[in-house]
Image (cartoon, rainbow, N blue to C red; front, side, top):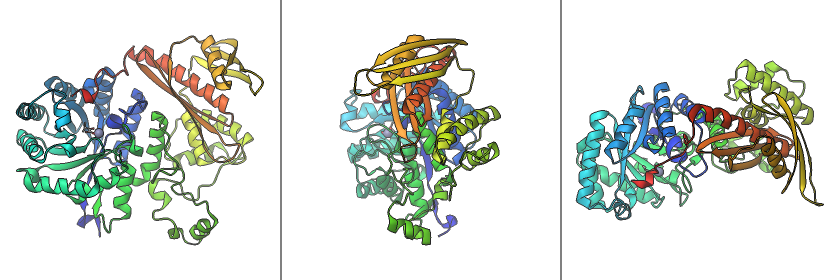
Length: 521
Ligand code: KIV
Ligand code: ZN
């Protein structure tokens, strides 16, 4: 079946809103801009860039993403309240293609929160959707917890929203409660029943609490939905949202039985998956479909033999289709700067000359210690390099640890051009080293995340360390990679501190703190 005979499904990515809402997944302003650009470049139709009323930081991020947008529609979330909708419009209005997404919880449990009767809620929906539509000609409306809302009431409120001017009706399975048969049936019956349904796009928004988000989203499409709401790596509250990479690849690989297509360039999936994992600090599970480290690995002898003879014996899609370089050859200590730049391009990463210089120095150092430097090692080095001009730099680190007593760290830092040293004991080498950094650079930053992952196999593997710090409502992350886990940890910690210093001076206190949650609706 060709694309001409298939129906297009719009991809609505909410990594920066529903995904970022996940506790601990907070991203910095610059990280949000970077992810939005990658989403736009990969052909995502609609980017939900944030919840503008939630905080100053969200407002600024949505506004800037809107201003920079190219192809994608830029959408902001707003509760069913006029000031929310006004704020949302302020943030998205400079996009080439803006959208307001407004919602209210319509199930009995959710109606009880604002304490509205069914009639009062219906009036509120009419008022807020009309208001949104007077500001913007692209309005999405969602009855939150739709899958637990009474059928008659759901039909009634959707009809009101359509009459008030909503152009997309999203049906959220807010708590991941539905199952595929029910998901398809609900959309099919709504389209057949609600007057005006054939004039709007129906969307599906699934959560993964029972592990059925992808199946439910695809079933909703079979039922008539033509927009899937999803996130990169399935990021999102609790068990997450539908994973973008899963629905996109399911339609691509099984076009024979799922006859729909999207505008997403699947070859960009791997790169954005890695970036989202790095900036959110949420590691991708090894056996995660499509983007997990093992998704294309063939360990067993029988599998390896089969794949070498004919890749299709155990592969239903090509690694290149999701952006994994085929037959990727590792670099070694004799590889030069040109080979490194070439490899970075293959991996979808463009870096400036200064950053290349920095990555090259680290690459040479790593290649001296590790025989083969793999793609993942290189990507880890990219995440670990900084923009330069850092106030704090690591000069030397020595740790003593073992079974005989507390760990000790001796550290030498250059802070604002001056060398300083400190010695501390701690509960393990990382704790001792972090304490020593704090002794030289006193701060009250709270460690929100400390995560270590091995980049490749073997005891000489690099460890990538992610650190997220929060101080007075300002968040900064740091990443580093080294064959020595303690060194990587200290570098990541120092990088986060450096970024915190810069961010504090640029955005002021409270910039990343959310004052309002979407649950306050
Ligand atoms: O899960 C949900 O119901 C939501 C809405 C705000 C659309 O994220
Ligand atoms: Zn959601």
